[in-house]
Image (cartoon, rainbow, N blue to C red; front, side):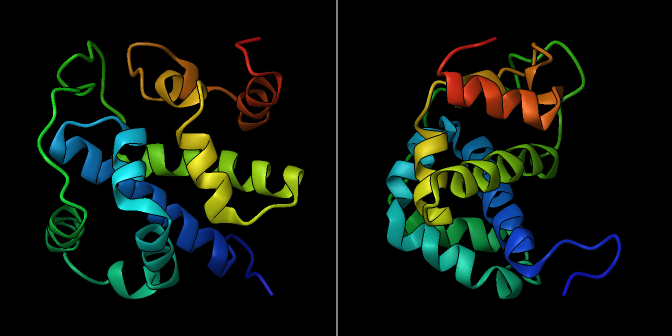
Length: 153
């Protein structure tokens, strides 16, 4: 049962997983899709399953462990430096992805990790990660409807 004002444990674990993906992407200057694809389903599942433990640890160390184990190299994608406005935190973006992934998993009746991989590899990910646009601020249902339509509405 969910306490008033608190996320269900699985939602919290997904939120942490998405935030860590964003953290790693920022740190390594890679797209979120590149990070997800380098991590692969097995390591993403590990992050998700052990999110409660990792959440209590230093994010620098946790990210370094996954960067090393997935052999994620420094890239050239830097949406932080390219941003002309206030940069949302990796927690803010983690929440956007969590909401969308949860809706996709429920809509498609699929595993949350499969939905995560699908969402990060879709056209919607670069739109969310363009911090010079206001798309990541949009209503979660609107973002989901764009995703389902496979185009910006």
